[in-house]
Image (cartoon, rainbow, N blue to C red; front, side, top):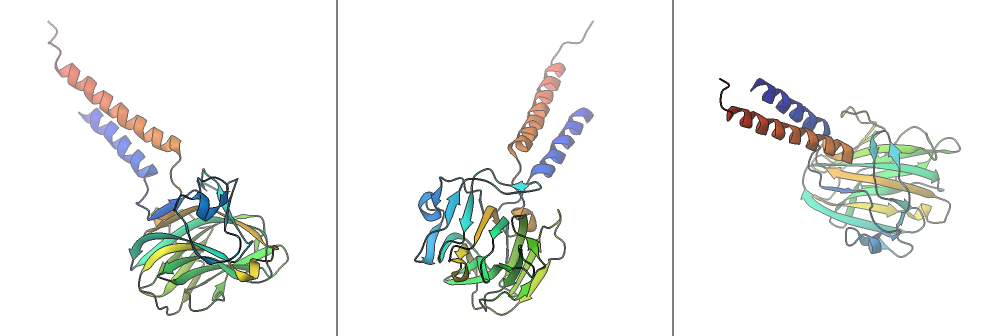
Length: 267
């Protein structure tokens, strides 16, 4: 009996090591290459725009253990927005993703936002850095088209892991840049009033200042949820397999123990 509880504890610990929360949405962009709206099978719909759609392209971004197994999306070649609906939320919503800016445009633009009906709130911006070959990130609740606060410089061509949180009950957006494992203090915080009441979608946006062909940036491994743990990377298949093996081992041991109890005593 003690041995059974020992192996059960192993399985529980393994489950805790690889489990993740129930996300509102995650997307590894496991689609064919092409226009995101056309190839996503209804996952993404056009929100606005008249030029070239956001593109699904081959390749992946990786930052530590945070990565995806499909493709990635490319933004920067047109004034075009795509939206994915989520279950309506009245409290905070987190979004995690990987970003790589290879060529920086001439101005600032927000490339990601939380949708509230027809409005875009909790916006995440990118703009040229203070030095050549760098970018800065900014955030705004949605009251303005300019970034409210800005980060330091990050080199172009480097992969950045960002997690944004927008709480429309307090009108606060927070941004973590290359965060550690646990939820610590955000790198950027901005507060301003917005008109929306619930978050019902997430939006990728190609901005006007970046539609002249001099900008290229990529996004991968989108995670959306109501808690920090919801927007961490999904466990790799080998982790899930390890958990299944431990569970199968425990079941097998129980069956052996039950068989032993049915054996006649040795005389």
